[in-house]
Image 1 (cartoon, rainbow, N blue to C red):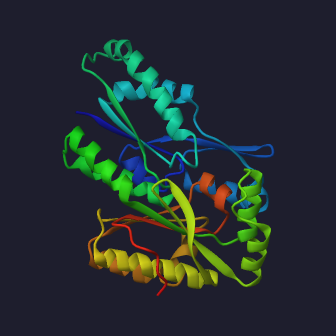
Image 2 (cartoon, one colour):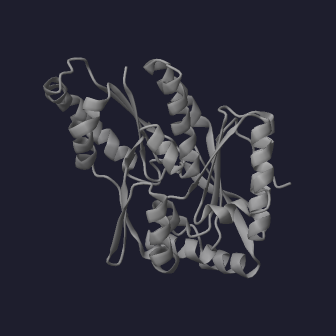
Length: 315
Protein backbone atom coordinates (compact mmCIF):
# COMPACT_ATOMS: atom_id res chain seq x y z
CA UNK A 1 0.00 0.00 0.00
CA UNK A 2 1.23 3.46 -0.89
CA UNK A 3 1.10 5.59 2.26
CA UNK A 4 1.33 9.37 2.09
CA UNK A 5 2.28 11.76 4.88
CA UNK A 6 1.02 15.35 4.98
CA UNK A 7 1.92 18.09 7.47
CA UNK A 8 1.30 21.83 7.59
CA UNK A 9 4.16 24.30 7.28
CA UNK A 10 4.19 25.06 11.02
CA UNK A 11 5.69 21.57 11.49
CA UNK A 12 9.41 22.14 12.08
CA UNK A 13 11.49 19.49 10.36
CA UNK A 14 14.65 19.74 8.24
CA UNK A 15 13.93 20.61 4.61
CA UNK A 16 16.02 17.69 3.33
CA UNK A 17 14.13 15.22 5.55
CA UNK A 18 10.83 16.47 4.17
CA UNK A 19 12.06 16.17 0.59
CA UNK A 20 13.79 12.80 0.97
CA UNK A 21 10.70 11.21 2.52
CA UNK A 22 8.14 12.71 0.17
CA UNK A 23 6.29 14.56 2.92
CA UNK A 24 3.64 16.88 1.49
CA UNK A 25 3.37 20.33 3.09
CA UNK A 26 0.14 22.30 3.41
CA UNK A 27 1.53 25.84 3.13
CA UNK A 28 0.53 28.74 5.35
CA UNK A 29 0.69 32.14 3.68
CA UNK A 30 2.24 35.03 5.61
CA UNK A 31 1.53 38.65 4.67
CA UNK A 32 3.33 41.63 6.19
CA UNK A 33 2.13 44.80 4.49
CA UNK A 34 2.65 44.26 0.77
CA UNK A 35 5.12 41.40 1.26
CA UNK A 36 3.66 37.92 0.88
CA UNK A 37 5.27 34.49 1.18
CA UNK A 38 3.66 31.06 1.06
CA UNK A 39 5.59 29.01 3.61
CA UNK A 40 6.60 25.74 1.93
CA UNK A 41 9.33 24.92 4.49
CA UNK A 42 12.06 26.44 2.30
CA UNK A 43 14.68 27.46 4.87
CA UNK A 44 16.52 29.87 2.58
CA UNK A 45 13.29 31.69 1.67
CA UNK A 46 12.22 31.76 5.32
CA UNK A 47 15.50 33.32 6.47
CA UNK A 48 15.38 35.85 3.66
CA UNK A 49 11.87 36.90 4.63
CA UNK A 50 12.88 36.95 8.29
CA UNK A 51 15.75 39.36 7.73
CA UNK A 52 13.70 41.58 5.43
CA UNK A 53 10.43 41.79 7.34
CA UNK A 54 9.82 39.71 10.45
CA UNK A 55 12.23 41.33 12.86
CA UNK A 56 10.63 44.77 12.49
CA UNK A 57 6.97 44.15 11.63
CA UNK A 58 6.34 40.46 12.18
CA UNK A 59 3.80 41.08 14.92
CA UNK A 60 1.56 42.75 12.30
CA UNK A 61 1.57 39.68 10.04
CA UNK A 62 -1.55 37.99 8.74
CA UNK A 63 -1.29 34.20 8.45
CA UNK A 64 -3.65 32.29 6.17
CA UNK A 65 -3.74 28.48 6.23
CA UNK A 66 -4.96 26.34 3.35
CA UNK A 67 -8.72 26.60 3.06
CA UNK A 68 -11.14 23.66 2.92
CA UNK A 69 -11.33 23.96 -0.87
CA UNK A 70 -7.56 24.24 -1.30
CA UNK A 71 -7.02 21.08 0.73
CA UNK A 72 -9.74 19.30 -1.24
CA UNK A 73 -8.21 20.37 -4.55
CA UNK A 74 -4.71 19.24 -3.49
CA UNK A 75 -5.96 15.78 -2.61
CA UNK A 76 -8.22 15.30 -5.61
CA UNK A 77 -5.67 16.74 -8.01
CA UNK A 78 -2.71 14.66 -6.82
CA UNK A 79 -2.75 12.78 -3.53
CA UNK A 80 -5.67 10.43 -4.20
CA UNK A 81 -3.72 9.27 -7.27
CA UNK A 82 -0.25 9.10 -5.73
CA UNK A 83 -1.33 7.28 -2.54
CA UNK A 84 -3.83 4.73 -1.25
CA UNK A 85 -3.87 6.01 2.33
CA UNK A 86 -2.80 9.42 3.65
CA UNK A 87 -2.06 10.54 7.20
CA UNK A 88 -2.55 14.30 7.51
CA UNK A 89 -1.02 15.66 10.74
CA UNK A 90 -1.75 19.23 11.78
CA UNK A 91 -0.78 21.83 14.35
CA UNK A 92 -2.99 21.75 17.44
CA UNK A 93 -6.53 22.77 16.59
CA UNK A 94 -6.61 25.12 19.59
CA UNK A 95 -4.14 27.43 17.82
CA UNK A 96 -5.11 27.12 14.16
CA UNK A 97 -8.10 26.24 11.93
CA UNK A 98 -5.98 23.87 9.81
CA UNK A 99 -7.24 20.72 11.54
CA UNK A 100 -10.88 21.75 11.18
CA UNK A 101 -10.31 22.73 7.54
CA UNK A 102 -8.70 19.36 6.81
CA UNK A 103 -11.52 17.52 8.55
CA UNK A 104 -14.16 19.36 6.51
CA UNK A 105 -12.19 18.75 3.32
CA UNK A 106 -11.87 15.05 4.10
CA UNK A 107 -15.62 14.49 3.69
CA UNK A 108 -15.59 15.94 0.17
CA UNK A 109 -12.39 14.08 -0.70
CA UNK A 110 -13.79 10.71 0.35
CA UNK A 111 -17.02 11.41 -1.53
CA UNK A 112 -15.35 12.53 -4.76
CA UNK A 113 -12.15 10.51 -5.15
CA UNK A 114 -13.44 7.43 -7.01
CA UNK A 115 -13.75 8.84 -10.54
CA UNK A 116 -10.38 10.57 -10.16
CA UNK A 117 -8.62 7.35 -9.18
CA UNK A 118 -10.45 5.32 -11.79
CA UNK A 119 -9.39 7.73 -14.52
CA UNK A 120 -5.80 7.20 -13.38
CA UNK A 121 -6.22 3.43 -13.49
CA UNK A 122 -6.77 2.71 -9.79
CA UNK A 123 -9.92 0.85 -8.74
CA UNK A 124 -8.93 0.29 -5.12
CA UNK A 125 -10.34 2.48 -2.32
CA UNK A 126 -8.61 5.56 -0.94
CA UNK A 127 -8.49 6.40 2.77
CA UNK A 128 -7.52 9.52 4.71
CA UNK A 129 -6.83 10.07 8.40
CA UNK A 130 -6.59 13.61 9.82
CA UNK A 131 -4.67 13.74 13.10
CA UNK A 132 -4.39 16.65 15.54
CA UNK A 133 -0.81 16.54 16.87
CA UNK A 134 -2.05 18.54 19.91
CA UNK A 135 1.13 20.61 19.88
CA UNK A 136 3.09 22.94 17.62
CA UNK A 137 6.36 23.76 15.85
CA UNK A 138 9.26 21.38 16.57
CA UNK A 139 7.02 19.16 18.68
CA UNK A 140 4.79 18.56 15.65
CA UNK A 141 7.78 17.00 13.94
CA UNK A 142 7.91 14.09 16.40
CA UNK A 143 4.71 12.51 15.10
CA UNK A 144 5.71 13.05 11.48
CA UNK A 145 9.09 11.39 12.02
CA UNK A 146 7.36 8.43 13.64
CA UNK A 147 4.98 8.17 10.68
CA UNK A 148 7.95 8.00 8.31
CA UNK A 149 9.69 5.40 10.46
CA UNK A 150 6.60 3.18 10.65
CA UNK A 151 5.88 3.50 6.94
CA UNK A 152 9.47 2.65 6.03
CA UNK A 153 9.43 -0.39 8.32
CA UNK A 154 6.38 -1.78 6.52
CA UNK A 155 3.83 -1.43 9.32
CA UNK A 156 0.19 -1.74 8.32
CA UNK A 157 -2.19 1.21 8.30
CA UNK A 158 -4.08 0.17 11.44
CA UNK A 159 -0.88 -0.13 13.45
CA UNK A 160 0.43 3.19 12.15
CA UNK A 161 -2.83 4.96 13.03
CA UNK A 162 -2.86 3.51 16.55
CA UNK A 163 0.77 4.38 17.16
CA UNK A 164 0.52 7.95 15.82
CA UNK A 165 -2.47 8.67 18.04
CA UNK A 166 -0.50 7.37 21.03
CA UNK A 167 2.55 9.47 20.16
CA UNK A 168 0.50 12.64 19.57
CA UNK A 169 -1.17 12.24 22.95
CA UNK A 170 2.25 12.11 24.63
CA UNK A 171 4.24 14.64 22.61
CA UNK A 172 5.53 17.66 24.51
CA UNK A 173 7.03 20.88 23.29
CA UNK A 174 8.99 23.47 25.27
CA UNK A 175 9.88 26.94 24.02
CA UNK A 176 11.95 29.89 25.23
CA UNK A 177 10.96 33.17 23.51
CA UNK A 178 13.68 35.79 23.19
CA UNK A 179 11.57 38.98 23.12
CA UNK A 180 8.57 39.30 25.44
CA UNK A 181 7.63 42.70 24.02
CA UNK A 182 7.32 41.10 20.58
CA UNK A 183 5.30 38.24 22.03
CA UNK A 184 2.93 40.70 23.67
CA UNK A 185 2.57 42.80 20.49
CA UNK A 186 1.78 39.69 18.48
CA UNK A 187 -0.71 38.48 21.06
CA UNK A 188 -2.50 41.83 20.97
CA UNK A 189 -2.65 41.76 17.17
CA UNK A 190 -4.39 38.38 17.39
CA UNK A 191 -6.67 39.47 20.23
CA UNK A 192 -4.89 37.25 22.76
CA UNK A 193 -4.47 39.05 26.10
CA UNK A 194 -2.41 36.32 27.73
CA UNK A 195 0.82 38.36 27.71
CA UNK A 196 0.17 41.56 29.66
CA UNK A 197 2.15 44.76 29.38
CA UNK A 198 3.29 44.57 32.99
CA UNK A 199 4.56 41.02 32.70
CA UNK A 200 6.33 41.85 29.43
CA UNK A 201 7.91 44.97 30.91
CA UNK A 202 9.02 43.19 34.08
CA UNK A 203 10.28 40.20 32.15
CA UNK A 204 12.37 42.37 29.85
CA UNK A 205 13.61 44.68 32.60
CA UNK A 206 14.71 41.80 34.80
CA UNK A 207 15.69 39.57 31.84
CA UNK A 208 13.26 36.91 32.98
CA UNK A 209 12.28 34.41 30.30
CA UNK A 210 9.27 32.10 30.50
CA UNK A 211 9.43 28.43 29.61
CA UNK A 212 6.33 27.84 27.49
CA UNK A 213 4.86 24.34 27.32
CA UNK A 214 2.67 22.90 24.57
CA UNK A 215 0.95 19.53 24.86
CA UNK A 216 -2.52 18.05 24.83
CA UNK A 217 -3.84 21.05 22.92
CA UNK A 218 -2.78 23.48 25.66
CA UNK A 219 -0.02 26.08 25.72
CA UNK A 220 1.03 27.61 29.02
CA UNK A 221 4.06 28.93 30.95
CA UNK A 222 5.57 26.38 33.33
CA UNK A 223 8.63 28.26 34.62
CA UNK A 224 10.39 31.64 34.67
CA UNK A 225 14.18 31.74 34.46
CA UNK A 226 16.59 34.67 34.52
CA UNK A 227 18.56 35.18 31.32
CA UNK A 228 17.82 33.84 27.84
CA UNK A 229 20.97 31.70 27.58
CA UNK A 230 20.41 30.31 31.07
CA UNK A 231 16.77 29.53 30.31
CA UNK A 232 17.69 27.70 27.11
CA UNK A 233 20.40 25.75 28.93
CA UNK A 234 17.91 24.70 31.61
CA UNK A 235 15.45 23.62 28.93
CA UNK A 236 18.14 21.59 27.17
CA UNK A 237 19.14 19.99 30.50
CA UNK A 238 15.54 19.05 31.16
CA UNK A 239 15.33 17.47 27.69
CA UNK A 240 18.55 15.56 28.45
CA UNK A 241 16.91 14.15 31.57
CA UNK A 242 13.93 13.00 29.57
CA UNK A 243 16.23 11.25 27.11
CA UNK A 244 18.01 9.45 29.94
CA UNK A 245 14.68 8.40 31.46
CA UNK A 246 13.57 6.98 28.11
CA UNK A 247 11.52 8.53 25.32
CA UNK A 248 8.48 6.99 23.64
CA UNK A 249 10.17 7.40 20.24
CA UNK A 250 13.89 7.75 19.43
CA UNK A 251 13.34 11.33 18.28
CA UNK A 252 14.31 14.79 19.50
CA UNK A 253 13.20 17.75 17.40
CA UNK A 254 14.65 21.24 17.77
CA UNK A 255 13.87 24.47 15.94
CA UNK A 256 15.19 28.00 16.10
CA UNK A 257 13.88 31.34 14.90
CA UNK A 258 16.95 32.24 12.87
CA UNK A 259 20.24 30.80 11.62
CA UNK A 260 20.89 27.35 13.08
CA UNK A 261 24.50 28.28 13.81
CA UNK A 262 23.16 30.62 16.51
CA UNK A 263 21.23 27.81 18.20
CA UNK A 264 24.21 25.48 18.02
CA UNK A 265 26.29 28.04 19.89
CA UNK A 266 23.86 28.24 22.82
CA UNK A 267 24.90 26.72 26.17
CA UNK A 268 23.66 23.19 26.69
CA UNK A 269 23.13 22.47 23.01
CA UNK A 270 26.12 20.18 22.51
CA UNK A 271 25.46 18.35 25.79
CA UNK A 272 21.93 17.57 24.59
CA UNK A 273 23.27 16.34 21.25
CA UNK A 274 25.81 14.13 23.03
CA UNK A 275 23.19 12.67 25.35
CA UNK A 276 20.90 11.90 22.43
CA UNK A 277 23.76 10.21 20.57
CA UNK A 278 24.66 8.05 23.56
CA UNK A 279 21.02 6.92 23.90
CA UNK A 280 20.45 6.30 20.16
CA UNK A 281 18.02 9.19 19.85
CA UNK A 282 17.99 10.91 16.47
CA UNK A 283 18.07 14.71 16.49
CA UNK A 284 16.17 16.70 13.85
CA UNK A 285 16.93 20.40 13.87
CA UNK A 286 15.46 23.03 11.59
CA UNK A 287 14.88 26.71 11.08
CA UNK A 288 11.53 27.55 12.65
CA UNK A 289 8.70 27.97 10.18
CA UNK A 290 7.90 31.48 9.09
CA UNK A 291 4.48 30.98 10.67
CA UNK A 292 6.13 30.15 13.98
CA UNK A 293 8.48 33.11 13.87
CA UNK A 294 5.81 35.70 13.19
CA UNK A 295 3.86 34.33 16.15
CA UNK A 296 6.62 33.98 18.76
CA UNK A 297 9.39 36.21 17.46
CA UNK A 298 12.90 35.93 16.12
CA UNK A 299 15.37 33.87 18.14
CA UNK A 300 12.91 31.57 19.93
CA UNK A 301 14.13 28.03 20.69
CA UNK A 302 11.88 24.95 20.75
CA UNK A 303 12.46 21.32 21.72
CA UNK A 304 9.97 18.51 21.16
CA UNK A 305 9.83 14.84 22.15
CA UNK A 306 7.35 12.15 23.14
CA UNK A 307 7.43 10.82 26.71
CA UNK A 308 5.33 10.31 29.79
CA UNK A 309 4.34 13.68 31.29
CA UNK A 310 6.70 15.11 33.88
CA UNK A 311 6.68 18.59 35.47
CA UNK A 312 9.36 20.93 34.15
CA UNK A 313 12.17 21.42 36.64
CA UNK A 314 15.16 23.72 36.22
CA UNK A 315 18.45 22.16 37.20
